[in-house]
Length: 148
Image (cartoon, rainbow, N blue to C red; front, side, top):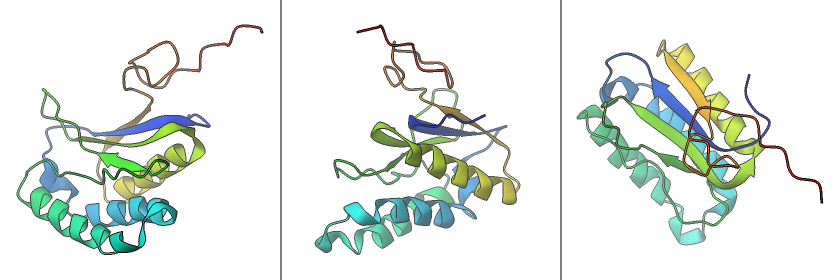
């Protein structure tokens, strides 16, 4: 079951896959991330999402790790493709603070992948210090707060 709020939502494609597997679904994933960021885009940046889509698709179709959508807007949503030692395909959505939007967007992307037949697993708050107490495992309940 997905948490109510999270700082990061991770999707790991199962099996021996490479980035080419994402070529059919990446435009829809990108569109959903851009829509989540629409309120934060500045006027001069209106063409940037299209440019990033073209660059990322070129990398994906060549089997290379794409750059994702890693903008510097303070409250914006990011799509990050980390480098993994085991070479598995992973990406995650992040925001500076825990929020429902990360969970909603991650679950929405998961639906896109399921419809395309791509087996994957979803985890939340897996980055170091992303969950109170520094847990690096999958989704864990938030640590209880001490009484004031």
